[in-house]
Length: 110
Image (cartoon, rainbow, N blue to C red; front, side, top):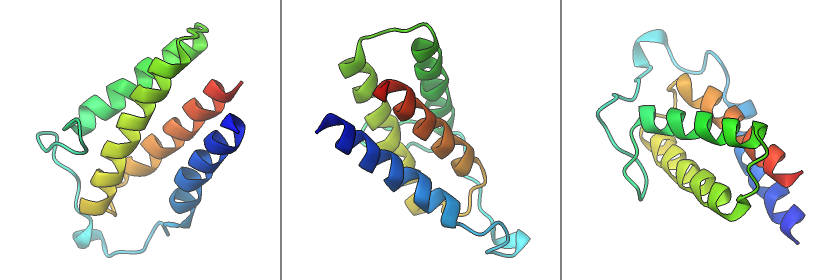
């Protein structure tokens, strides 16, 4: 059951990231999320989202097995990224962070 949930989360993140065409909007229409705007239930900035993902990646690399805490942290980052995508869908930094989150979910599944 847990593997199914993790797989569905990964697919819900990766598939939309692959669907976004690189040149969907004219260059002048791309709006970047400002660093001082906050997203999601935990009101995370884009810098905090990146830091959270890097921290989770390091914890996975060192085999930290506090999986419930790591899943909670990943889900809060995911929530913030969904809010970020709703407000700034063409932000090019989103794709990088979505792929990082999908990689973290893959590592947690092992």
